[in-house]
Amino acid sequence: MTEHSEYADRNTDLFFDIADILEFFPEQYRQGTWGEFAPSQVDYDNFEAQFGYDTQTQFAGEDANWIYADEGCGSALCIAGHAAALSGWFPTITGTHRNHPEVSWTVVHKKPHQTSSEPGHKYTSDAGREALGINDAEAAWMFDSERNWTPDDLRRFAAGVNILPDHRQ
Image 1 (spheres, rainbow, N blue to C red):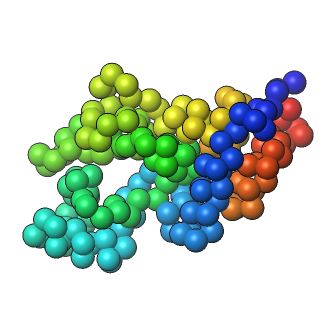
Image 2 (image 1 turned 60 degrees about the vertical axis):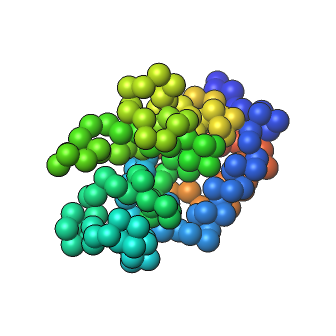
């Protein structure tokens, strides 16, 4: 039998914060990815004002300078990705493409602009699990890319409802 995390161990504020994102900014939630670039037109306009060129037409949104942008980057994240980001974790640089760094949410770091191999990095799933205060089995179920959580689901989990369904216990 799998033990559930204790209510006292769960970061209820973080669960509620992520629930609010899902409710009020649904475009920022994609359970099928740790995190991916999903800018709005406003994001593109802010980027052009900051960097002096139109990345939308030049790089089709694949411009690595998004990691340096002043405004929100227009990213969509899964539950683990939001938990990590809201807990102060940043995406890491995983390599280069066209002489620009490639950025990924698969591995995160507490300092911005770090490579995925720098000491202090974590997998997003680990950072999210620890931040939410849930155990490995709950994280595996909650972070599964096939799940589609609602704000109310997350609020129930914050209130102490079991994350794992009966057949997974």
